[in-house]
Amino acid sequence: MTLIQLRYVVAVDTYRHFASAAETCFVTQPTLSMQISKLEKELDILIFDRTKHPIEPTEIGKELIKQARVALLEAGKVVEMVKASKGLVSGDFRLGIIPTVSPVLLPRFLRAFTTQYSDIHLRIEELQTDQIVDKLEKNQLDAGIIATPLALNHIIEQPLYYEPFMAYVPEGHRLAKESFVLHSELQLKDILLLKNGHCFRDSVINLCASAFSDQPQNDHILELESGNFETLIKLSNQGFGMTLLPYLTALDLNEQDRKNIKPIEHPQPVREISIVTTKSQLRMSIIKILGELIQKHVPKKLLEKPKEDLVNPMKSKISAV
Image (tube, rainbow, N blue to C red; front, side, top):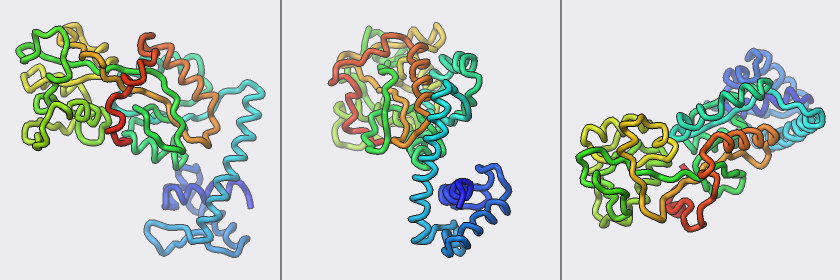
């Protein structure tokens, strides 16, 4: 039995497909299949039921895979321990980041990261929160940058910064002449939203919920099959309503559009942005580097945690998406 064989077994369990597993292990499918078959013959068991589609582990296979993951984790600890003792920070690092954070955060720190840590190959995927959590659990990502809290026992959350929500109110809107927006003035039927699946959309809906009766408002909402704020801003400028934006998104607007930004009354709604990983993650030195570099490149006032009752005011209502 070898670590390579165990790695192949875990890959097949993760992808439930021999070809996909072989691709991620950078070997041919016959090579991977041969090594797994060799292990099955050595142990005199079947690890996978190949008659199922997608492929599934047998009952004894499930137990073996569980122990294989432990063995690979412990072996990885040895490698990382040696690297740390030599002061080495290198290798591939897989990072997931949600779409409402990616376009405004990555340009702030990515150049500095690649310049200072050229031995780290950063692989970035833009994904929604549930996809990031799923890939962390399957060891397909090393870390994620998402809005928190998630309140998941197996996920470690390290807050990076606290981002206020800002109101985008175009000329001619009923609130255009106001210097700031009251909570009671936020009407869901008047707010352009991101499509389903974005946690920022859920945050906005929960923030506005107290201003509505129990009657359904869906007939009045312009719901877009768009995952970016640029579309919301353009439609807002065309008179389709107002919208809410995260602070860094508002900060990056052109001079003309920034004139339409208004603060929301206190307690100002804030979202907590964190770097998250699993408890079994080994690349903590790189996670620490990422966290410190990100905090260095966002406005200092976002690093200060607001009073507890002002942080994520809608957190009790938001699902982990």
